[in-house]
Image 1 (cartoon, rainbow, N blue to C red):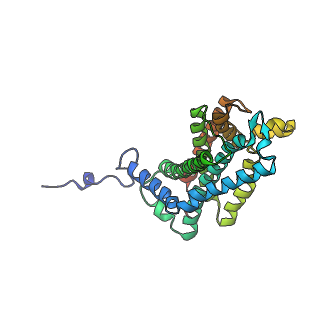
Image 2: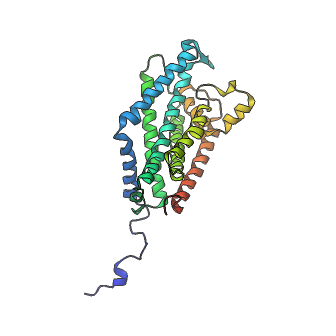
Image 3: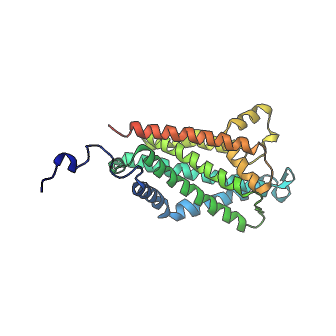
Length: 274
């Protein structure tokens, strides 16, 4: 029996594993998740402890149990914002550190060689960051539910779920871009110190923006972190400083833009291929 050599094998460079390499995406996601789950005491427990310390320090420093914001006890107002801050920081750390460490150690080729498209790489990395951000949010939230003096009531579940997901997705995408752009750890730290940290602290986490001067209120309403924290807090206190639907649309548009940017970076091999 003769075999037609021309038709026995697929054309060079053609895709033979289907429209989506689900196994490859799942493998990349599993690797990114196991990275932080293996050291859960540092990646899940430590943020909860740090956030509890923030809660204790700020409630004591700013008036203790007697301080209220919009007729809400300060601890109840502060807790949701601290949860989102922990989500933001850890989602960013997961993706940025993963890519940067792989580049510095020279094993980024292990990610580039498998048959994964630019979109599949994007999904795998981002879902790993989302997983870490959401798990950290759950761990911090549980800690606050169990913490004496902090009341956590769920009034609206959908904004809690949406804004937690949007926050972790946005910072995961920014983390991927940072990891691709950075050539050393100082570069990644500069993004953390001059972008992520300032936007987090100036987002209404510790205060209501109604107390700010008009100019600072305008800045806050441009800051996407404000909408994520305010929307997430709305689910717990049934009060918001912004229009919730505006926050949904704004964060969704930014996440879609960042997703396309990350996809383009992987597609062109930005700072990955020699």
